[in-house]
Length: 142
Image (tube, rainbow, N blue to C red; front, side, top):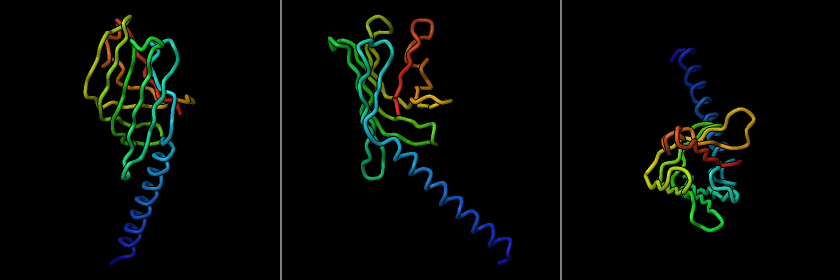
């Protein structure tokens, strides 16, 4: 093999190893209990538990109004994209009386942290309800 080919193989291997370390650190930073919720439930945030099972991340989040009539529930598998983005593939159940009513669906949603924010916000928020009716902000805090 030529020196150029060997150099390329070594550099490629190093890039893969560095990327894997970064993925692991990003995943580890998500594990734990986080504040979680949607702004139209005014009684305070709920919690989301992110855990690792057999090398994969899962989320189970809930927020309820004081009277338990309004709620948001999110449960599914997390795929880390990078240090500021991840997807959740799972189930979303949401009911807010004064906004868009009942939603119960399978979802694949992206959560993104921008700027200096200390939370990940649902990117596809217009999918929850018409932005002309309600603009939902579904957040998972650090």
